[in-house]
Amino acid sequence: MSGSVRPVADPAAFKDNARIVLADPVLRRSFRGAMDFLMDKRAAQFPDAAGFARLRRLGETVRQHALAHLPDLLERLEANLTANGIHVHWAENAEDANRIFLSIARRHEATRMVKGKSMVSEEIELNHRMAEAGVECVETDMGEYILQLDDDRPSHIIMPAIHKTKEDVARIFADRIDGAPYTEDVDALIAIGRQALRNLFRDTRIGVSGVNFLVAETGSLVLVENEGNGRMSTTVPDVHIAVTGLEKVVEKLEHVVPLFALLTRSATGQAVTTYLNVISSPRRSGERDGPREVHLILLDNGRTQAYRDERFRATLQCIRCGACMNHCPVYARVGGLSYGTTYPGPIGAIIEPHLLGLASTRDLPTASSLCGACGEVCPVGIPIPDLLMRLREAARHTVPEVPAPALKGQGAARTIGEALAWKGWRLLFAHGALYRLFAWIAPRLRGLTPRTQAGWTRTRAPLRLAPRSLREQLARRRTGGDRRD
Image 1 (cartoon, rainbow, N blue to C red):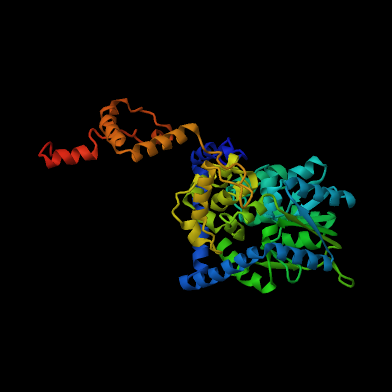
Image 2: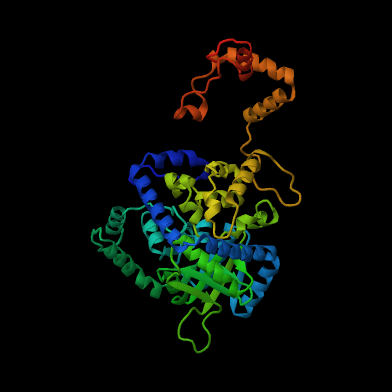
């Protein structure tokens, strides 16, 4: 960031964070330019609206089919992974997942891990928790590596360092990498980063990755990437640990095909990515490379709550392409860091309340103009605007926990003042005489209207009642009164 103050990693600070970013013209230009670039690339991949609609319907059906059979598919996945020699671990929350990571590291006496890009590892704060236990976790995705060197956070799920300029990266590399010269040549910067990382793959015993799709039928982990660091992290070290959310499962390998086509085109505007890794077992007898041990950690962390509550189940259809963020007018202005969460933008606004609860995330569903762009571009048909409205309602109203456990923090945004205001509104509109009395008195007290009206008057003139109600104006017109009304 060009400013000295950084947004904090706290969704409850969303509004303050947004003000910091909006006051930074360099950051705003960076985001605007990046979003325009990504939107143009995606549009070029879907020139035929009817073709996109057909492919999206197919992807949506695949995801809905998987969620409709989620318990059965997870059991089938575990059985086939185990038969293939892959160790399966279940983690209820971030603490469980980090404990599993640490136990594997301890068993192999590892003090370092190399990690490919994984948003779930960000979700459980893997790097920080391992560092506390004396295990270094080095990012190998170039964007994530830049952020780790600068002690910063991702601002986009596909392009994590999108808020950094080449001047920022040049300064970070010159300051943090031994022997690195200051250069603003992008190719030279990439070469510097790759050179610094290359030996780590060879010398590290554990590689970590995320997973894009889990195939129940074959017991396979599918990983999509462009830089090759994912393949290096999953093949060079002796031990590979994959971590992902339990909703990523699909039934058959053929179901990956439409999702892969939708993911790459929607995310980076590519027909295909450089690498598509399908991992179905550790190294077998006679094979010359590959890990000798493979683990999969399946993380819940609030996902089963979204699954059980049918109002929010569609949230789990997400394939993490980031298209909704690229097309969101709010995200394009306030950037990903403002949200203070692992997943920013519209998709973060509907996922994070299930991971963190609504008490701290209640402002995120309101960070939307409800223009509908996020829902239109979603490649798997998630009705994001509808989900945002349901979360806004849930933030203000407590509902019974039947048939599903309630979303944690429901009713957190409800205030006494707002509740009284709505009760008063209902009272007025339920009693005609009371409403007419109010309509007669209110315009005559307009002089008492406060000049400061919460957030409204920060950028707008104060609201004031008209001198006469509409009913009075119509009555005066019918009787030939003041026609200026």
